[in-house]
Image 1 (cartoon, rainbow, N blue to C red):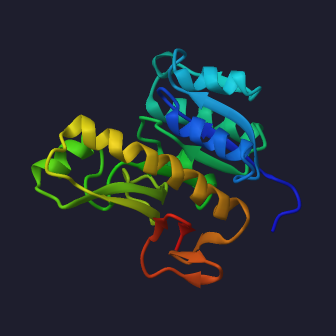
Image 2 (image 1 turned 135 degrees about the horizontal axis):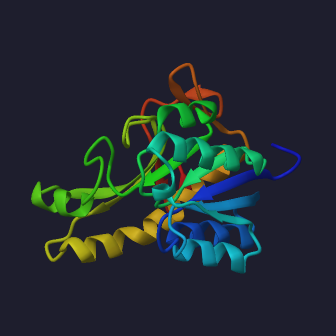
Image 3 (image 1 turned 90 degrees about the horizontal axis):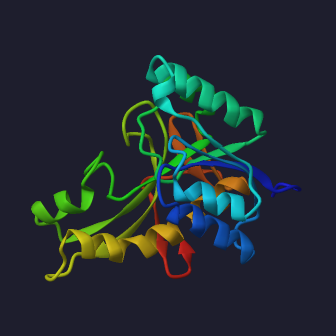
Length: 220
């Protein structure tokens, strides 16, 4: 167990509901980390206002002011590194990130995605699950690589698709599970119980044969 709280940066593009869940978990003593930066690619992102209200430093960079995606990503990630962050969380950060920018963060950057990966990488996951006639849907937290939503899956939260679900209702029912899943994963990462090494996710020193599952009492 680390003697001092792990330093965490968060990137978000929108309303920041998962950031709010992380901040709430910290306030309740469930997430012993220090948030050192919240960054965004959108100056109007509500996530930035949440961070400012919590006295967390913020940055907003406009991708359109850079010559290409790679240059933007390298600058953004250099600023994240300068914050002293040990971990980086993508919480609704709606961009594909250049592999060179990601390389120094291998095994230290996670993302939450609203599907049971490897199903439905990318957008419109709820719509696609319904269209496929799936009986189950969910959310995944995974290590980030240059492959879109393709890094090793750490943990998942699952829910049954009900007969009356449409895209909006399914998204609404899933969101509270996302808000429990992301803080739970960050907590076990920050306290050293979980690592990505030798091509596998290790939990309490042992390689996982499949993702951890969020239960009422936590991850197992």
